[in-house]
Length: 456
Image 1 (cartoon, rainbow, N blue to C red):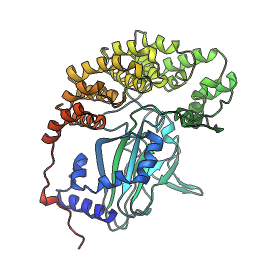
Image 2 (image 1 turned 135 degrees about the horizontal axis):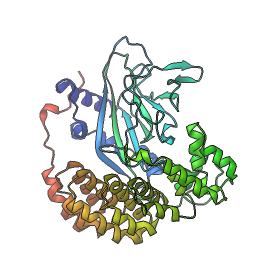
Image 3 (image 1 turned 30 degrees about the horizontal axis):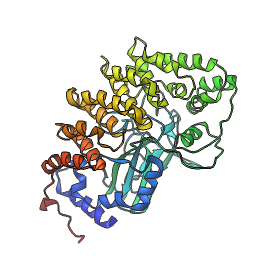
Image 4 (image 1 turned 180 degrees about the vertical axis):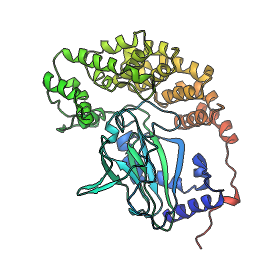
């Protein structure tokens, strides 16, 4: 199968004009890629991180890496970057709500241009200082323990995803990554897919594990496992929050719920306010990292207070925190903010409503009413997409069909694709009837120009 996919992919790119890429249409051109997604080992790995009913995003992309024979390797062909969630940014979460999957149909040793990743960079709120420099192709140096990026990177270690043919690698969507130079004589192809969690994790069963790392402890607990808290002294926590080393600061944020001193609230709110200016740079990606700490506190009033503030930055940060906290009492306020004047606030509010609805089924009717108006009336395809993704997180029952049915005919391909996917997943008579006509209109007609040729 892997060899067939490789040669089918190669045939597609040799059939097109130079530099043309079919992007999302690679799947019907190389239909064997669906067999990769159907592999039980891969599905099991993805389900362990995303839940049984994860969704394959309609965005997919074949990353080509053509030979630079004789070029020195290892070296970067592309700058390190974070994707920010395919087709317009989605809010960044450390919890496994989105994954990237890289699939190699060919053997990919180090000199054949594997994807390079920065392990642990997904735990940082940025990649390089306060700015990401995705266009900079940086030099790599070889150290005793492996490859290193330049010293001004907060996460310097670089790992090449070398692998035999047929390997699929699952990565957190916020991982720093980039293509390395292909110094071999043949092309390297990496098929990239995006996988989306659609519901809140269930309890993972009996037993408790001791986890030392604060972030991993949080993620383990979020996935439904039990792990005891590690009490933290206020002074130690505050020093960590003020640390210049980015990972020490992140660790402190995720220990916020383990500090008993009431002063934690004021310190976190002060830290959040100090980062409000970043919200205007990109209101979807640049919420203050410390709001993740607010979401871990028993007292949720500070989050409600942020959402009641006058400034968009405060409101947007509060909406993000409400989603992280699964704060059902915030649904009415979030619904009002879906009509906020600031587009960043609207997007944060819609995402939060979906996250809360995936955790609290009783909130679903109010959330559906709110998001339905966006799907029906909003002129921005991106905001309609936020709303449809929010509806998907509410689960697979008929209550959303009346909203998703017209969305399946949406003029934007991403909105309609997500709506069709969810209608198929609901799989009731009503949902099936709603999806037949838009699917018929989208039918791909096999073109013999792109039939996979046999290897000569």
